[in-house]
Amino acid sequence: MSTSDSPLVICLGSVVADHTFKVDEIPQAPAKARARGYELKIGGMAANAAIAVRRLGGRAAYWGRLGDDGNADILIDGLTTEGIELGGMKRIPGGRSAVAAVLVDPLGERVTLGYRGEGLDPDPSWLPLDTLDKAGALLCDPRWPEGAQAALEAAEQRGIPTVLDGERSETRLLLDLVPRVRYAIFSVTGLTNYGSGARAPEALRKAVSEGVTQMAAVTRGEKSTLWILRGEERIRETPIFRVTASDTTGAGDVFHGAFALAMAEGMEMEAAIRFSSAAGALRARDGATAHRAELEAFLQENAAIAE
Ligand SMILES: Nc1ncnc2c1ncn2[C@@H]1O[C@H](COP(=O)(O)OP(=O)(O)OP(=O)(O)O)[C@@H](O)[C@H]1O
Ligand SMILES: [Mg+2]
Image 1 (cartoon, rainbow, N blue to C red):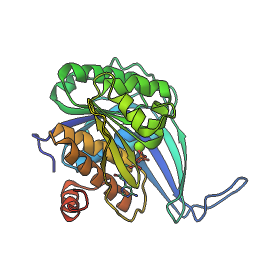
Image 2: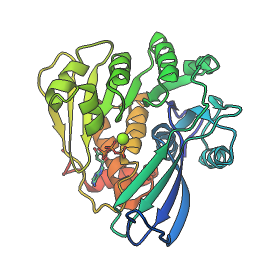
Image 3: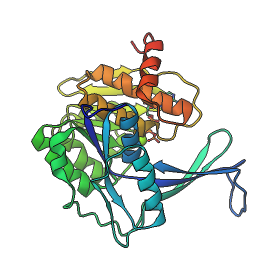
Image 4: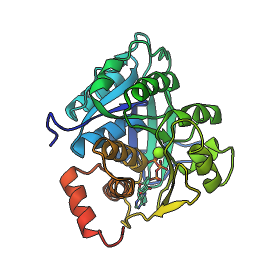
């Protein structure tokens, strides 16, 4: 449970209504297939990260844009139920929220069709930047660059730790955002986009050579996490926690939420990466985001592996 002393982590970027269909087989066109199950889940990097922050014992705010459609009602409901503060969330009149159709087969193989929404005015001037006075960390994803730029600048002025989810996006967006954050944590494709195809060590070195970036990392799913500190040549490596995965969707989002919370709590870097990897592993194992007690127990049980 979080208390009023728990640090506040602000997560800015995407929220998506994931319309998730369970199918026996992913259909090939032309086809008319029947789904065996359906669920509407909250997706989107920043929203998933905010949920992770809450469940891991922090206070969380989601900052971003929704349309004025039915999907927005459902997403607001879900985020509110999770206890997420929504003072930095705006419903844009006439806008349409981001949605995705997700098809999942019995082996967990999936096809995602994402729609990023429409009419979601990018102007960030309404963001409640003063809330950063009380925040312990700010996490941004690249789906609302104008919002991220405004919030990152305000966070830097206040000396608050900042984290980027360097997920797949246009190279120019990552080139702009990476130097603005203290901690840039990429996915494999995001790092390739940022480095214009350069190999991981080279791209990570570039990330810590610019702007305010103190640490850059790449998460690699079932492979170890690679990271580098500013001023060092050496690439460090932190192992993952082995689990039998049931659904790896959102493991990266949860990793980022956990990492931002760890920075807000003042955790050391190596411990923070272990903490975040454990949160990602549990998400991959269970297809759901763990709570703090479960994560601490998992870390203890697996202490030997990650040392
Ligand atoms: N199968 C797995 N087994 C153990 N840990 C995993 C597994 N998948 C993910 N993780 C943990 O979660 C972290 C983030 O996962 P990953 O690198 O796949 O993120 P991603 O590529 O951003 O994906 P997404 O954003 O779709 O969740 C990994 O570094 C690892 O620590
Ligand atoms: Mg990701």
